[in-house]
Length: 98
Image (cartoon, rainbow, N blue to C red; front, side, top):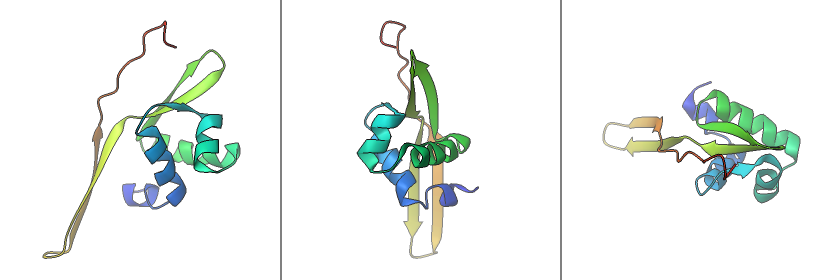
């Protein structure tokens, strides 16, 4: 699936917007973007396959965090669209914070 296809979903864009501020666990994320848990997991799976998000576990919760910055450059003169994703700086949690 191309990056355009991955980001062509309003639901996935909402998830990315939420994860841009801080990592969230699945239930919290689903509530914040207004979808059921099964739908959220489906979209998170697609984002994870595209390597835009990654997950980690803390005790009984699975958290997701955004790991790539995504930029879209569109220029009308030559009708060029460039969608680029690059690894974002991810702050590692210490064992005490997990």
